[in-house]
Length: 288
Image (cartoon, one colour):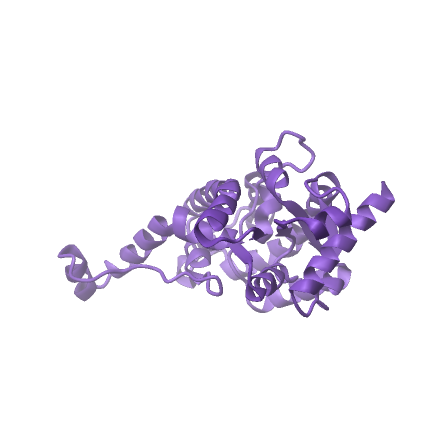
């Protein structure tokens, strides 16, 4: 790790951290807390995915929808209007809408082949956005004068890395320039997140082989155009979250430290966050 002891972290003139874990446990809140204190650059991996790597695909999808409306189609053909997404740190809806869900088109579903294609685009985009971290560290320092850096990852980071491979490109890159910190939820957090998702299913990324298994087990012999997209998402989410937990744990064990979500939730300001990270480093050193 780039900070071997709590004192290394505390005394470091440049503190650099990568938060990872399940969505909804406070990664973005901690990163924003650091940013709002001043002196910290907040790098949102999901924002980078949606703007730098998926922006054109998102815009093209919007244009396809607009071309189905004759009035808008004529304006688009003559370059009389501009259609684009308005992704922000706080609103990533254009990205999730593009990712979509498989199933019945009448209920907003996509053909499974198209859905799998978009999943592949997202995987490549997420890997690229994660690998951009060192460049953004330099950019934050050289352009904006920020020495401190918080990388705010998406919940699917564990799906695009192999935490047990010491040569994993993404994890090697991140650990060389930041301290990976797992925001670790317990069973209560997991059940809360599952219940929240069940009320409002959202698109998400799956590992290809895992997605194929989930789809086969759920759809069976049912024609894909009759599958309820939201029902499939609800069915799959619990399995995905359960499968991700050990992957996060391996990332923390092999590449970084862990911070309990219940402790992270008590952070009031940037000093609390940095103190918690120091404590997490100390706990790791005491165990080893």
